[in-house]
Length: 523
Image (cartoon, rainbow, N blue to C red; front, side, top):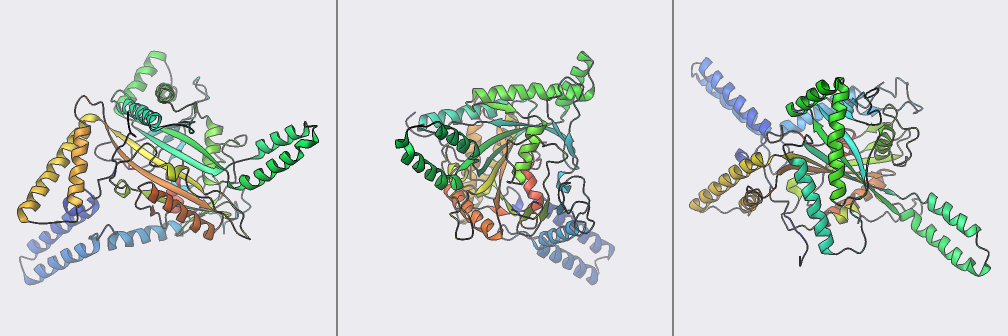
């Protein structure tokens, strides 16, 4: 291999629907047309009926039309109404039992768990022989029930590696994804998380003190002082990077058939059979991740997984401090606001969440390290006279749902046919656009070629989200600016911040397998 391995992820820069409109808008238009026809017919074609029908159509069009990727007037009003309703019921506030305000009816709405969590809880596996497994069951309205398991992975080792080594690692991870996407696999989606936090230098400082105490040669004193000064300079800016993989196993017909078969053959309870099936899928995924060169892979139990969730929300806690972590207590206090969510009993942390839509990724060749500036290249806050320097605390989350090869091929074929027809029609009319049609056509053609039978490739639906944390609103603004600049270096053109919904969006960046709605291809 003479050069870096590249891929083109972008290209789907607009919706593939009539006029590029979303499904709710098209449904609203269809309903308004039906209502207008009913008014016209019931009015017997009278003038007032025609005027009323036209007024209805014009009003619906003006309220629901989306201009230049901006939400429509109706969408903005509904979002504002939903935000007002949530805050009126106190859904934007949660108090941990250790919070001084816990139980105060003025400050605590009294939620047992954060409202965005919904119907999510650990699967009861006590007495099944798999008591060490930590399986989270989610059964929220509007989506299929699914189970998740969290893995901690070392990831690809950094250092003196060339393009060939990174290309090999990228190819191996692609093979892992292809194995997960097979119809024989019950894992139908994964979540990749990368967490960057200040590095805890305490163990190293303790080790250095121990070694220095053993030194007897006075001539080493200048070197010791120099090393101590170096630690003082680098410690506030040192980052720790951790990676996690969440396996998402929906309760499909195949999953339930495997569970029922196992329950009959081993005379197990339903929960025991579910845990056994999930464990088998987890073992297979873990083995494939190791084979893909992802280093050490650990399946997290309840305490470790809950410690990770707690540390993701509140940076005060360390990722590995799990002695007092449990599902009931791992949710820190927070208060959601319009531009951030205040985390902690005193709101000492501010977190802002943004989404990275597939259309925001530039349609250019991307190598294996295309996200490196966003993962490990974000500058630290240098601090000032009042604020200490600190690394930029952030989480990057990527959600992937697998699409079986035959469905992906059918979708690519249909999109390519529609794109070619649109190009031919525009050519016949002598119509020129800004190049969007060509970019869309190239993207569908590229998918069609990648998914040819025998390639071993499958389709995916994916999205990404980023959570940025600061010590106060000003620090958060500076951190978001640095993250946005790093995203631009990673070929990400735009981060869409979840205004008014940060307290809800932050749950998409936790290891819970969330953040991506089901589509006709993945249901």
